[in-house]
Length: 328
Image 1 (tube, rainbow, N blue to C red):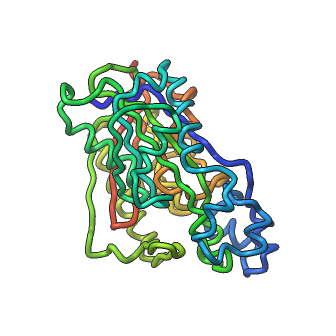
Image 2: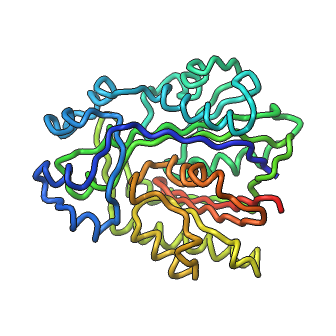
């Protein structure tokens, strides 16, 4: 088992609502956005005036304009996770990061975040785009417990608004910034744990979702959405079959790409609205931090006996799934 001791999240203060996008004059009116993707707002670490004036035409300049660094965002999320776990930075024996929007090619983002927290431990990055969180869980679960430190911190700082071209109406409504952190252990039991983990990739479709170095996000939207719906549906059905008779306590958290995609998965898998946990309406797509941030926001609402299916998809093309169980 891979035990979950704490989760934390961080979102910057600046809000990009649909009126803001409409006022940019790029052809994305408020009703069009809601009907198409079901997103009402998203957060950004960029000043709103910066976006208005530049439309983020040069993504290389975004980091300098940002109101907070990835390390600061990562540390904020990590401190929440550590507090929930009843631990401090000195208890962490390894830091693993992953992000689709790194600020540095080298060093590892994990090293920069660990420095911000005052952690002295091995640091490494592992990236599978928006599938990163659950892919990392898969790799950790395969390790021998005796070969791992007692507590491992994973952190995912995502600044997707830094790579959005705000003159592109197809992309501008989708993304926000957000960060998540988790404290995990293979050695120390907790009342929450992950099991039934799995992952996969279709490398032949690597070019369907891309962020080339120093350039903007781009994707084959319709093909990627069909892929995301198919893979998430397959994963949830697999978990439903593995845990029959749990309908009342079987919940679902998917990759927060857009609300329409998530609702389609729920409809195909027979998941009622009250068992669908999501935050995409208020925060948009925040990459690999999106699904675990939903879990973090519902940390205090998790009930004994809950079975929470987590199914994520990402560039690569990649997919991953797992079940978060809460002890009776």
